[in-house]
Length: 102
Image 1 (cartoon, rainbow, N blue to C red):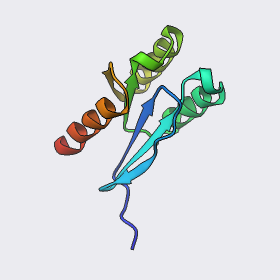
Image 2: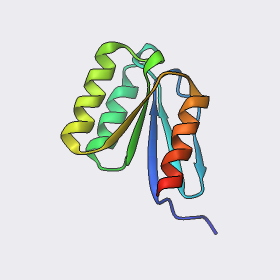
Image 3: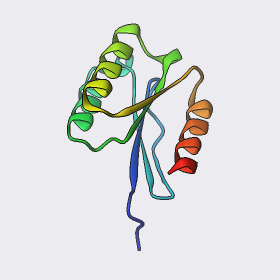
């Protein structure tokens, strides 16, 4: 029997090759626009559709304009967001903190 997803976290930046379901928390990745403009549109659609509970931004792998668009969207929609200066290892630590506090 498949576990019910209780939260969905978006990790934004880099090439977007990481996705898994961990303890009822679905991790979705959205690559930076360097890898295709559709990724930012998909993220914004997911945010507007209220399917994302937390956004983790890999600031090292995002442009300034992407960062501002995403943070503005999160603020307007009341979606939580976290900044991570490293890569996926740092993002996973932030995800674990979120899971531990749920």
